[in-house]
Amino acid sequence: MIVVGVALGISIGEGPTGYAGMSEEEIIDLMIAEDENQGLQLLYGLLIGVGFLLVLISFGARRKKGSAKRTEKKPAE
Image (spheres, rainbow, N blue to C red):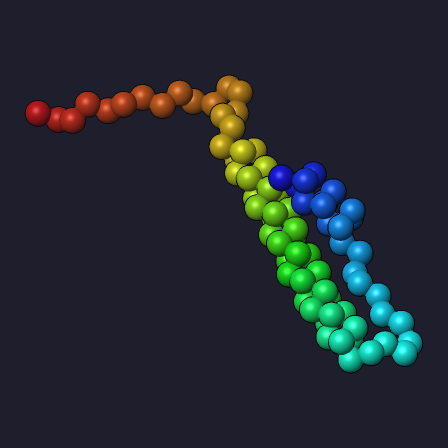
């Protein structure tokens, strides 16, 4: 997830550019494209964050070598 988020962010993450002398319609289209680009960047950031969180959880969930074994206690009768 981390790699996919970074790859998508780099390849598609370039923002739209405007130029001098744009018409009103082109300016509106540019503003819409900038808004879409900002939303995609947020999505890629969330994808990277969730992937990083899963990596941290997987390292925390590993059993350490030489750790004590868990034993089940039988209830007292």
